[in-house]
Length: 205
Ligand SMILES: Nc1ncnc2c1ncn2[C@@H]1O[C@H](COP(=O)(O)OP(=O)(O)OP(=O)(O)O)[C@@H](O)[C@H]1O
Ligand SMILES: [Mg+2]
Image (tube, rainbow, N blue to C red):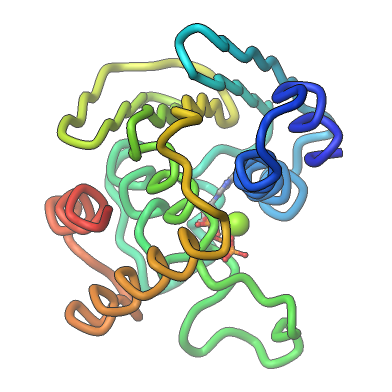
């Protein structure tokens, strides 16, 4: 489904751009299926060739990010804003954490990678917006904005600048290396302060 949508969106575009867009869509849809408990979701997508921008909005009416993270006992979360910021940090997951039940561990175990990677792809010349319950956060390469919001579930808009998207493999490796370096520095294995989460995301890409 993700690659079909990317194919329709970027007609005739470069294979590596389609692969990157496919990756980003797949991560967001996988999150809905794995974490949201939503029965369905909505996707709206546009490609603006003259602007060189792809824009994909995906919304579910599930439990929202804060409740999604609530199964991780290491996290202390006092607002929707804080929950969203923490969910974006590499290594933070509601389904994978130190001391999690053994029977839940599989080779597919979540590692808290998806949102971090996706946001970094979008910040390369584009914009990532994520809203859940009472908060909406928008991030570009250099700016972060936060406004009050009000939907149940999770709303994500990915704006990607096609010309800035290098080959998927190289890009993902680079992000993983940077992310891992940062993750080692901060030991994101339990919890982080919201201000730290913000810094972590904005300085990664
Ligand atoms: N649509 C959603 N609804 C509810 N909670 C969500 C949703 N998307 C993400 N989350 C929460 O945010 C956390 C972080 O998401 P992220 O994609 O970064 O990691 P993950 O899905 O746990 O692991 P990975 O993506 O590496 O498999 C999730 O574990 C979940 O708790
Ligand atoms: Mg995920």
